[in-house]
Length: 391
Image (cartoon, rainbow, N blue to C red):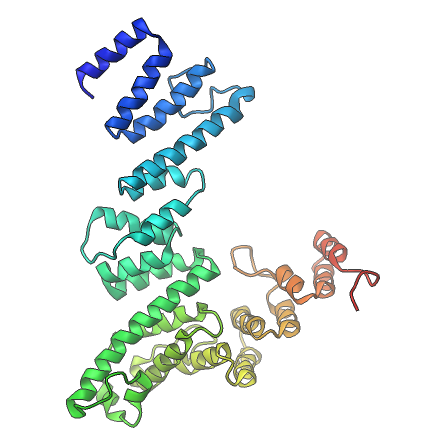
């Protein structure tokens, strides 16, 4: 602001009073795009109209209860306006400062969605990626931006950190994209080696077709992509919803992984110690192929596990698959035996599973065994009576 602006406000105060000063202040701040100050000024104008102190414009500590709702409404409206003004100027991080406070992420998500996926580093892009992925505003776009600017390795690390905080839909979306990207890179690498011996190979051949009958591709410990990236993306793919097109691509990735030299096949956590064969069974079920065979594979893993501390981890996977296969009664029984003691930090609710399965009788039974009279009562009251149960 220039000295002239300050002088103008002084003269307005003398001649026309406070309302004129505040109106002109707002105009000046808009003209100079001083949006942070404009937010403060909006709250000052509201507090001035209520004859409240002006020294801390955004604080509610000095707002009496009878005026709190009115000031809060002004705060929300001002945050919404300032957020949109920053978005109009392309400043997504500044816009997010305001819109996240009032829990309105949608305009920011729309702005991020429209951004080109840049390959160069910039501080602004870094901030946007953090907002998109770690603030869960647009995780898929965050993953796309990170892949382009930071590569597969850093993206896997970041997605590993973020995955647990994403919604089911967001996890699936991100996993599908990671599968497509890695599948493309691996297929192109394999295709280049095949073309050295077979120049006229079908240009659109799948990874499965390229590998068929060509064991020499992986002889001598050869590989075509970072094997840690391969195992990470296959692990991410467990978040993909049943029936998705990308699941067949994951099966092809598993087929490739099983052909690798054993020293390049890293074991996973139970029940995925045999990493690629176990995942092949998992994805077969999601594709509605050999469902009973796949379930038997994981049932046996659970029944054969000697360590009681590891059984909940195996049971969690089996219950997940049973739910996806619509075997809800068995899912409730397995969960009742192995998963009712899990803490709140685990993304699983036995009560919700019982509700989904229509098995509140089983929930009541478990709550009685756990001496949880509150949970027992909730289950009891939630059970439909015979008079209202449809026939």
